[in-house]
Length: 184
Image (tube, rainbow, N blue to C red):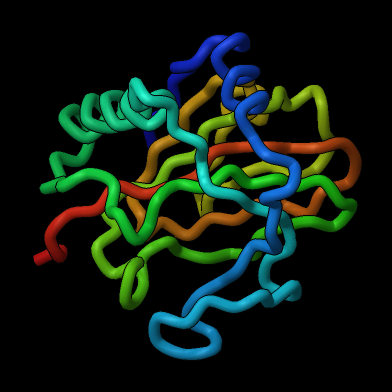
């Protein structure tokens, strides 16, 4: 797993300020209703999402892509193509008590089949909420290491992970995937 504080608090605030409060939609899951079909399944996942606003200069995706390339070069050396037009990153908003994302992997069918690396960028600091933590199966990390505002966590898309139920406060993060040729 790659963990690094990549964005400053001011840069995270810039991303948060670019969000449109009218664009939040219920988050969906794939693979339950059928191949390539995404649907709201609150037993599996409960939170809001909206696409990441990208500035004319490519911010914040250009910086995320560069950091993921660095991480991949030193840790996994996967063949990567970059972000996919039909599977762009999202801002996730865990704002209700109980909002969560059960155990899952990020690689699957259709648009998700070529996901190689997943990432999560903390936009809010872990002191602003209780619960809602990103966790990986059989991998222990200190909460503070993963919840600092501006921290980017990168991991193989086939790793089992979850977001624990929210207890209090609000957690926002950018999540997405870098794609590449099929694993062989």
